[in-house]
Image (tube, rainbow, N blue to C red):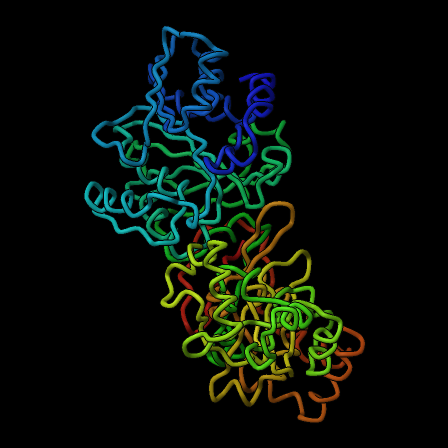
Length: 535
């Protein structure tokens, strides 16, 4: 596929259409690498379930001009554009259909760059999920994205000794919905290698997620899975002949565990009674998801203009940037309200009357009640009830995650995860906050973090719940007066006093990194025992 074809398509089709179909075009170097893998077992044919502008077709015919290439493409617009450019090809057949609803064939070689869309935009997923349950006898999670569904279906269609190469988001390696995908990849030794593209901005400049190449072969040979990290696109052609970042026995790859850690330069080991999982102290949960922030949140001046009384709102942190210090007080919140920030959250109780009734009618006129989340609620304008959380944890970060000790009466939206302590946690909430601010925590929690493109990092609530924190005995080393003074210091200087850092520093001895090859990685359990594999 030439650059001219991509440019000509992009010039006549707007970005909204490309987003609707999850279209990101495969660079020629990657298409050629994937085709060489898929065809290296001698297949005379190649199949692409998401044909697009034919990147794999052009790559395959440059390797094997006589290749019999077949494919499928849902978007008539992109297919028409390709046909106008390429004209009729004797060795090419592309059906204009939805791949996820077509069943009943097998393939010897498959390559694919599936659509990149979140589950929220998976429009016909109920129909697709039903077909997966019927044909594959698997029940997909509601969080499964389209790319993952494509991969699962292609794996089921791979013939004996067939080969598959997929390029797709790697977030499934660290998610709950990804367990079934990893299980299918491991079945009968199918998964051979995973290549994480750290040159993702060179590959897909508009994608904000980790991207990688999956190499699979249905040869029945159970061998260690190789994990590679590609830092420069020009090194891709020879990467399989280099030493992988990891080589892990398939028997020791647990589908329920997070796999992104295998791309890291060293394996973290924890085995200590001084560490417990965070859910020992309480639970992290998502912030409130309104489904239509522009309707439910507003400033004081807008509320006054609409004639809606202040008591109809709840104090709320609606954006991460509204909290600028690690310690957030009531006066900090009141200052936000005074400068007219969007920190009021509509709280409709009972049947709406007066100005609230008028505002709800306005919302329905604007279609807010038809949004993905709002249409799931009855009535659509009533939000879940929450109490202010004493600890807030930033969802996204770069370089340094954000943790806030919340002393205000404000609840929060999904920009922060909320920590609600149990009986044990209420007694040590301040000490836990100090731990989260420490350098030791940044090292220890890094194993639970999800790494995306362009240095973006993310935590989901359960990533935090099952991450590690000091035991109650370790936290007891912090005297009550020392905790109070450290919080005051942190509020002023945005960092911990050296003497408090020193209390947490020894915990990092349980997180030393091994430069040896990982042969085995046991499943993490509630006792927080990991094993370090020696040289």
